[in-house]
Length: 406
Image 1 (tube, one colour):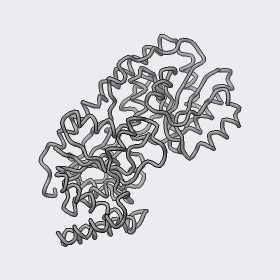
Image 2 (cartoon, helix red, strand yellow):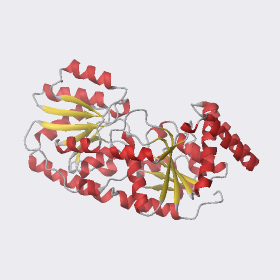
Image 3 (tube, one colour):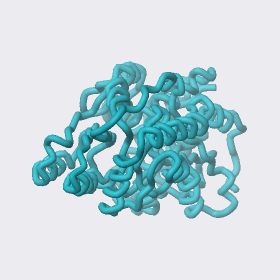
């Protein structure tokens, strides 16, 4: 079976879960053609991402003449389908935040992918994220391309489902994927009950082999924590700096490594300086998988104070690396973690609760932390083996494409 994967920007440091899914599907014998609208703007520090870039077809890099030519070719071959797709792009674009003009570009991208899908003999299209990749897949189907499906990650898609026509994309899809039961429930809210069975859960996965020999927890103190993620409002790093300042003010010594980068970096640097935490907090920038693993191996645990999430890969990776986690009680995180068993769950946005959880981790004995760490690892490996999740997705791909609306 040949599947065309559609992603907006691929590969990128924060989308390693897509790479793992694709490679797991390829191990099962599926052929995956990677399509991305654009390249990642920065350097690809992970060699695996650099390798993926070599096998990815970049749609916008073809140039506008090639995209317009593809659209004209589709229009001449099937004028009725083209006009229906144009009407769909116009209607969805009028309701969106990005406007009609952007959706007409999506239509050109869809025309190019439709022609490439025919040339390559693709059986299906699958998009990651319910935003423009799903729009391109939906329009490609309207132009006569293969049946499509897509994975919704959240939380952004759930912030404005009407503006991105998420419900319509789900209804038109052959099936749609959520990465957690919580995500599935949010998608079910947008469609009629008859469509619910087509919304399936396929969790993001980890490579168990990459965590085959977890490093033992560091002994003694100071407590060492890592935070991994883009420096953005929803990730809560500014609140984390306030919580660390509160813990340090109590006379507790700890070390925090912030792994990542993003628009909030200047604000985070100012907060560190304001609280005088230069000795306690360091910023590493983006690291490759080996660098992230080294930071995890040297830490007692992960802390993730997010205000909104889907089901964060960093949590399951830290758990698979046999590290307890402090995280917020949002979205799909409680489906993975168990408060008091694999770590600590705290209310989002609560600095005091976060500071208390960090203090609890400091005060916990090495024996208690080791017990939590082993429970965390067992949970992650049981529920998030990428090959097991790829098998679920492959079965969905193998089903007969839906030809009639419900």
